[in-house]
Structures are given as structure tokens and as C-alpha cells.
Length: 471
Image (cartoon, rainbow, N blue to C red; front, side, top):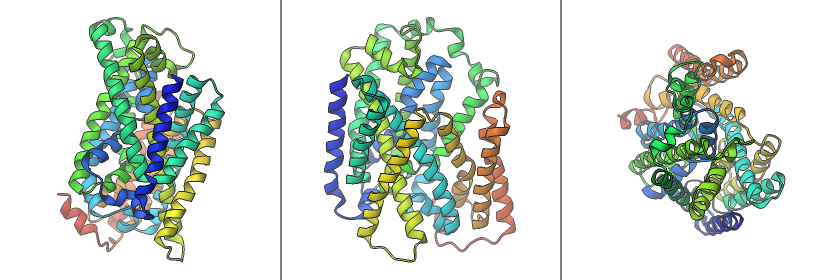
């Protein structure tokens, strides 16, 4: 697997570095590709962000260790999020001509709401980058025999180099290369399993508990936690900075909306292919010390070499694309929504481009450090996105659809929801895992409605536009 992986990373780097020529010294090109991207490019980029190491590698390992529904909950939630964004948010937000998602909170509410949103999303996405850098480094370590730390430095350096070079152009065009290899590899792998073994044979070899519906219908079976994961991913990813950056890059609002639906389709298809690999691995690969080896072990032992290579580099590419997209958007939010908003100076476009590129370095260092000290962010990753789900989703949706929403309501909602999520993390017992995800958004909603009702609505230029154009 070593040389195919090396070649794959070299091609990704070459494509990313070439996109430097597309930026043409414009920070808007660097940030949203001049809002010129066609349907297939945007849809593929959205799919690449959803189909990451968690939806593939993590899905298969959870299927192996916990059961089908625990693994499938990840792609189901991610696919749901793309449907929700496409139906309710893509068109109205695209029409606002935004450059980043936190900018919506500034234009709809206030710069203080934007500040809180920016900080929360930056923290979440640094952890997301760390999780995917960890997956990249782990794959490189497996195929090369080098230490995890060395591979982490190599992987981070490659991703940082092409991210800084081409910005969102680099993200989208490397996504286009990487995700199509992953799609083809997973489709061929699933087809090979079904052709050689048949779905009936795979199911017949499984322990009864693996497909037990109790995983979704009972608390003891994990139903509460699985549904919480689906709901959190479904609504929480509406706050995904990397999703929205691709939505904003589309050449029209209709293109952005349709691209979300297209990406949702591929997310669920490839997610179910990964789950099938996890199911097939249960009876064939034996006991594994590291559950993450479920997919690589099965691919290496039971799939034809070329299909195994495509699956392996597909997982690598999925992790690289998510790390790249998240690393990019964090640095842009830091430059535009923190530095530019709170400085007295009026920076030039050239300075904003330079600053966006420069800030990618500390972002990559912070994410790399987290990936090194905690190779599997796991719980931290879930909690991080739960915090955004808890605090920011209510102000986002109601800011689009409720004219009475106020800046005070948004701030109260963000603070109350975030605080509730942190308290629930420690207060909710393990037996009721899932409630810690589902309760905080309800508290956030109560805070939002209560505060908005007793305060005066802000005079916002885009409010009428949002409320009219979304219906």
C-alpha cells in the first residue's frame, strides 16, 4: 500500500499547489472562489467534507465493535444535515453574499453574537482538524512503518502547503480528485462483497445483537445515544463552517441547494458501503487490538488488490479533504470575523489574503498538537460539535425564519445552550448518554424565545430579505 499512498498524496499536493494560480491575489477568490463554482464541483466538495474518516473508518470500526446502527448513525446524521441545509439554509444564506458563516450572526444580530459564534466554531473545528490529521498520520504510519509522530508532521505539512497555496480552490479541486477515488473504491468493495458472498451470507454469520433494532428503540440497547448522534449531526452540522464555505462558493443559490442534495445522496451511499465492510469483517478478520484496523484488515485480506488500494487511499483522501477544508475556514474566520471586525484599521484586500494564509500555520500547529497528545479525540470531538448544536443552531435557523429574533436573544441562546452542554457532560449519567446532547438545545431555545420576546428587535437590513426569499 505504501507507493499508492505516496503517489496519491503527491498528486493531491500537486493539484493543490497548482490552484495558487487561481487565487490571483484576491482574498475573495481565496475564501469563496469568487462565488463562481458549478453544481458538480460544489456537490463533490460538500460530499468530501461529509465523507471523512469518521463516516468511513470510524463507521466500520463502530459496526464491528458495537453494531450496525451505531456505525450507520454517522453517515445517516451527516446525510440528514445536508438535506436540512439544502432545504432550509443554502438558498437564503447564499443570497446574503456571505464570506463566512459567523458573518451571518454579525449582519443578523450583532458583532458580539458573531464573536461568540466565531470562538465556539474555531474551537470545534480545531478539534475536527485534529481528528482527521490523526487519521491521516495513522494511515501513513500503518503503510510506511514510520512513527506516528513523524507521519503526523508529514501529513500536516502536505495539507498545510496546498491549503495556503490555493485556499478554497485547493480544497475543492483536491476534493474532486480524492472523493471520486473513494466513491469508486467503496462502491467496488461493496459490490465485490455482495457478488462473492451475498448479503444473506454476510447477515447469517453475524451475532444476533449486531443488527438488533433495540440499538435504536431502547435505552439499554443504545437507542438514546444513537438517536442523539443522528440529531446532533443532522442539525449541528448546519453550523459546519466547511459546509457553508462551499455553499457560499456556488455560482447561484439554486446551485448551492441542489449541491447539498447531491452530496447527501453520496454520503449515505458511501456510509452504507463502509458499514457493509464492517459487517463483513466481523466473521472474517478475527479479534483486533485496534478496531480502526477493521476496514484496512478486511480490505487487505479479502478484497482484490486494486480495490483494497482504492478503499485505503479513499479513507486517506476523505480525512485529508476534511482536514484541509476545516483548516482553511478556521484561518479565514480568525482573519475576518475576529481580527478584521475588532481592529480600528481598514485592511486592504492583499493584507486580508496574507493574514488568512498566515493564520493557517498556528491553526495547523494547534490541531497537530492535539492529534499528537490525544490520537483519538473521540469524546472531545462529539462534545465539541454538541456545543455548537446546543448554542448556535437555534439562533441560526430562527435568524432566518423568525422576524422577531433579537441580538439579545441570540446571545442568551448561545450562552445558555453552551453552558447547559458543559454541565450536562458531567451531570448526565452514562446510562442516559444522549440526554446530554438533546437537553441543551431545548434550554437554548427557551432562552432565545424568552429573551427575544422581552427585547426590541434589531433593525437589520437583511431580515425582510431572508423571511421573504425563503418561503
